Length: 308
Image (cartoon, rainbow, N blue to C red; front, top):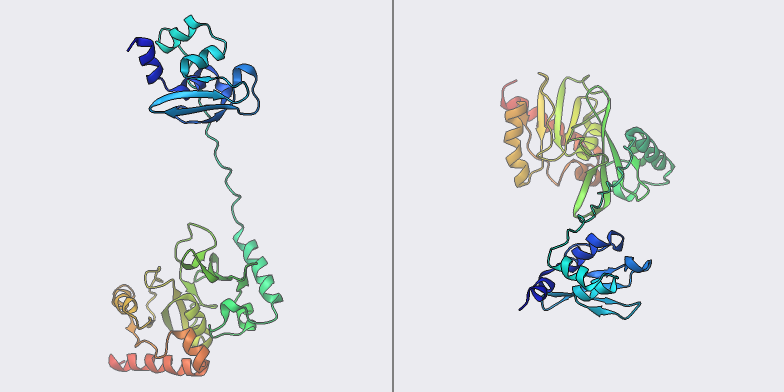
């Protein structure tokens, strides 16, 4: 096999076209339909393709076809120039560098504005939205607690710190999205605990698994205990402040494992899980007064066990 044939079989034709004719749009090593820039082609009509390991071309506008050597001749180069290029005897320009276009970043979300718009939607609702049914509260209470509603019917739950400052908005989807029921409206917010309104004024603290469970418990026993909702068993725990602290988790395996860790970090008393489900379910199915009695009974038992 002569040198020219070897060069033709070895050459990366898309790269060669990209170097000689940057306006073609050709990309090294990639077959495709490009522009025959040497004849002012505006609509891509130049096919570059590989067959049995060798690159070929077909110009659909002129009917010309062949290998790399034939393409150079079709592009107006002389035989001598074509041979020199293929044998590497003539320097070629560097392949065009395509500037990487950065996708424009969306403007930062105004958390308070987004929440205010969602709150307005909930205030306009005629009945309790589907996403809140079975959660143990009524529409008026959801409005008073500052909750909101997305255009898709998802719940917006504002999360405030102990001083009452808005730190996050947690979204509860009406229907799970990508297998997830919850997300935060803005990234980077972490998993801050939900603190009930007026936090810090009661004699004790009730820390519960789940923010909506905390809402149900705030409505049931918030006159006696400050209520904190943790974002699941692995959510961020509140900082202990020296007051008697009671821990209420679900009765499943995850809740049992997390209970000891919570007690190690927070101290306090680990309450017996509720019968009949979590706080929301008990409030919805048995009533808020039943939830109040069951929780306060467990708090009393915790005191009696340690002889307080």
